[in-house]
Length: 426
Image (tube, rainbow, N blue to C red):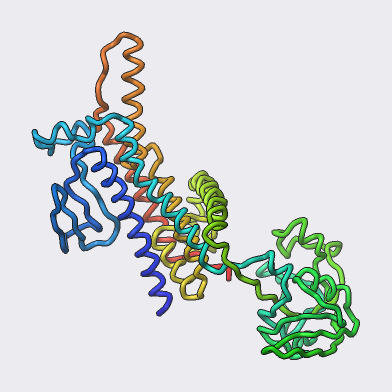
């Protein structure tokens, strides 16, 4: 039930973003004196509308986006009344038309930055720095430890221990529980996960005394740490993404094991420091969007393979359907920060994608406006007559091809998201 609510909530976030995109076009057009006759959220039959001034506002039945009608977007528009000709959009200076056509994407960028600022400023997030400075709080206790490092041939992942078969973990013997806070080892205060880990690993086969707090009460217990084969810390630091299947015997060492997973402390940056964090994340997401766009063509075969039953590549593009489903899963699991990050990332993607210089995207209209301007300037320099405006009707075949390609790609991603969706790795 919570997942369905999360899907609806995420889809609503996308819908509102698109409506604000159109509002950006409308607001700037009105600011420059262009005539805006309609602004609607949704498509299809009109459910409700009202008219204020010269603009009709309303809601339509299909919440799949929105639209704004600006009079005379191109010289070929044949529905411009004689009295509206001076206010036709195509008659305005190219810089004003550029502002209006880019306002939708700018709105997406502003939304993305605002979402990130709110996230970093007010939502408690994992703070890795505190993980290394605060006493370790236990998140999970392993029931056992595997003595030998081995890889499952089927999954190519490290084989986990099996309770009842492998030795019981020291943490389980001590009766440690999630929420316990480790304060000392062998009578010496210990703070930070890396510090505790180093001491534990160096004490394999030895009896140690562990001091921890539970419900405000301090307890000290002793246990002999089992020895387990683990990947060397230096190997992990040098290549943190190395798969288990690539680990060699030279990469392993025998170390002590306690058998716990730490709880990562959380903190908020606050409204001031949140600005810097939001800026850094914005740059990261924009770079990631351009990288993803470059990889689109090479990912198409993987989408077809996913439809034929192959395992879905998590790096393949997703549709609005897939994004909403992932958003629902994140909401269901309480992963609010990831839910919010996904919504911000989607705004950056839509904003950048919409600026591609292809019709019918906004970027296509901007490209044509500036092509006309540069061509007029060049002809004037050559002493030749201005060739005038671009005939959009002559560009319709190219536009239809772009629509066909985008439509086919959309159907492909939607089908893959329904039949073989991307699975969250946690």
